[in-house]
Length: 130
Ligand SMILES: [Mg+2]
Image 1 (cartoon, rainbow, N blue to C red):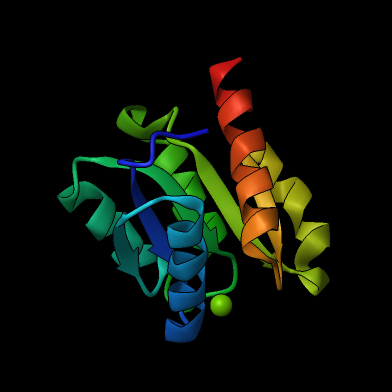
Image 2 (cartoon, rainbow, N blue to C red):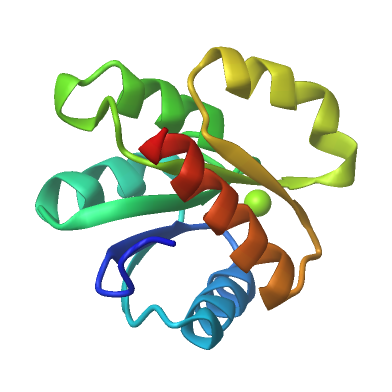
């Protein structure tokens, strides 16, 4: 599993969803969070916060989507290896392929339980360590 001191960047245009994700992360053991409401702001927060070690981002957001944000992250050498997990709705599953092509590490379908999130993060960490 990721070090629980890892700063997690939580991105979603819905405040409630950002809270749900952070609450689940707290239950898992994480305690350091930064957040953003769209892909554009997420890019700014990422660049302002040197310690971000994991991104959990919604897909469907105004200004810049999760996919836009992912592409921007992966095109920057500093963030090539940054673990990136997408939050998707069931209806967006078709688009996951596109995200995989763009370098996403994993995805979680909403709604999810803390246990499901924990399992996905465990999986993601193993992938990155391999
Ligand atoms: Mg959204």
